[in-house]
Image (cartoon, rainbow, N blue to C red; front, side, top):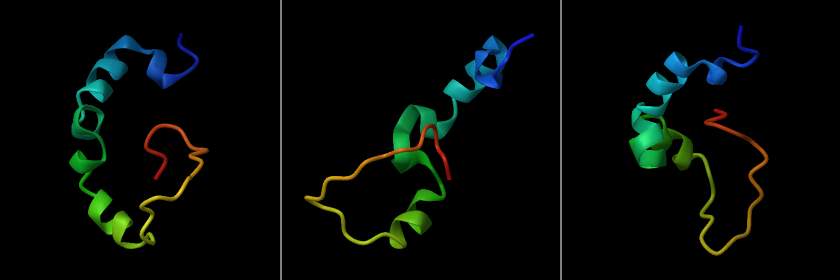
Length: 55
C-alpha cells in the first residue's frame, strides 16, 4: 500500500498527462481568473512555499 497517492504508478501516470502537467500554468483553465487577482509581479522576487498546484 502506498503512503502517498502520487506514489501509485497508475495515479501518477494519469496525473502526469494532465494539461497543466504538460503545459504549465498556461494550460490550467483557472489560471486567467487567478492571475487577474494578482498585482503585476514583473521584476519582483517571490518565494513559492507551495508544492504541486496548490490552489
